Image (cartoon, rainbow, N blue to C red; front, side):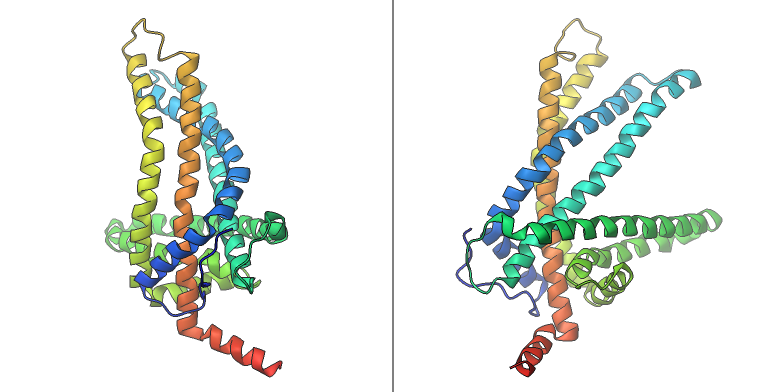
Length: 310
């Protein structure tokens, strides 16, 4: 692994721009282990997810081009579409959990290493497995609290439509600090999901502006990567749909070659989406470290503890 000449100090007060720079510096020096883990674990996962995504989009396009004329025909396609949507949701949860575990495992190893040295991936296996379990737990926790939140605000919006004026910007305001829950939970040394949520909002609300700016900048970069990797698949999908809707005798739209090409491009699109998420997870972690240092002076407390042990 090629490290930088000087290690990045995680627990250091930084501005939003410095956190963005730290994100790029870290990824520049640690992209190899992150990419290798993504190739070993997420690429095979993306191949399977690409098949499901093609099924979902094909069913959606067919329904748009040839809408069912009766309730009977609608009932005939609904179970298949529903199953594929459920599978997509499951794949998304699992994939995002694995990606988070990959990024934060490498960050943990980097932070705990005393020297800028190379290491085999086998050295981080235990941490990686532990982080995957934690990410799965946290993902379900987020689903539960999100479902509860949207049920409450949805009910209020139904009863009092004018509340939408406050609910929409309020929801956006709350989502920004929520991005810190994963680093708070993973690097919080077993603080628990509830405390991680409180920690995320304690640090995220007080630094909302800089966190919002970081997410916007890294989100734009992630969006560019997603666009580049998804554009070929989108073009082929539209081309196949148009040719199919024209009812021509051209066999291209239904050819095995085009279907195979779509699966390959769908895999690239899914894998590219995961790679794009690396920037957000890494940036959120550096913002968490910075905000925690600013609030609690973690590095000073660690120095005091280390001094007392001498």
